[in-house]
Image 1 (cartoon, rainbow, N blue to C red):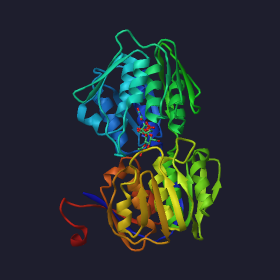
Image 2: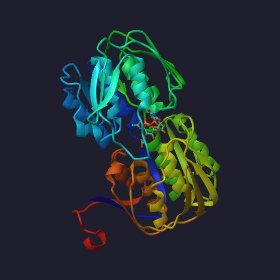
Image 3: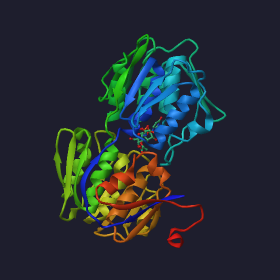
Image 4: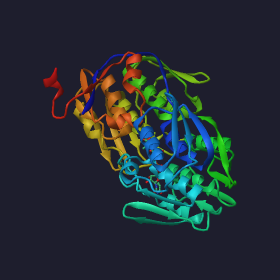
Length: 429
Ligand code: EPU
């Protein structure tokens, strides 16, 4: 078991560099299946979801060459199977992108239903609707999604009933090499959708409209190799912004696209945090008290659901009562019970959380329920009085590269402690 031990209430000062975007990397890596040739992908974050995705690709027959810490070369010329190993694919959410990519290139795919963080029901009906629209037969058999398009794929119009990041990406992947034009309406607009389109276009695809709610994919015969660098991670950057706001201090957050952070910056400004934008960095400074505010999560360019737990933690330190409305996921407040152990006063009713800002939390043993909730627990520990132990940090390491090292670099007192199972930290010291 691995824990983070945090001695809180220390201001953060200095500079932190943001890694490549997790949710772009886990889409772009499987997109390499569509490429006839070698593609080099740079600025890949070193996180366990990426490692698992690369392992699955290797199992399928892709040649993966690690160039340096954040770059790989992928050659999918010799893919030998379109069936992904069940357990490996089940362990991450983004494995569902293998369906779109394999279907697009080989007209068949077998991939287990995906895993990932639990936020209530996570259907993939819109992905399946898209695959069927472009000519595939899709069914779930023995835990696998089995997709076949014996006669190839042809362009089609797909209107998404809900704005879905995953469905938008998966339909784009399936459509790149299809015959004719596919139009996705009510598409998601997240930065990683634009990044995937840019990656595919740089390899020869013909995609327009990414970043708007209508994306047009004109099928091409093949796409060939090239080099592409992944965008910085919006949510990692947002997490360090909130950490600075919660703990106080002044941190320059480097290697970001400030435009992607505006939805987060706007809330922090309302709360009295100072934000200065530069070309590829933002300076976050918090010296005074934090004002209450309300937050509603929405698809991009709204406030990201993946920043909701971090925002709730920050509002615990604000003056007054704040309302947070989660409008993307049904059940994304499971971590609130952990914050209550630290003295938080939060009432959850369905999708709304009412946070009575108390200005202080006290350290406690808590656990990371999922990736972003885990990051939020770390933020809580950094700003709380006393010692916090965060358990189950493997969730956090799925999506945050070197979080302990980066936080230590800006003055946090945080240590990663590996414990033999069954040993309690207090007894080990
Ligand atoms: N939905 C459907 N049917 C579908 C797909 C989605 O009803 O076929 C619903 C979902 O139940 C949800 C909403 O649509 O209510 C949005 O889901 P979306 O498909 O956009 O989510 P996702 O693709 O499964 C990605 C990110 C999540 C992030 C969401 C929303 C990846 C690998 N995951 O998930 O990121 O919360 O978009 O922005 O890109 C994270 O990084 O911590 C994370 C969970």
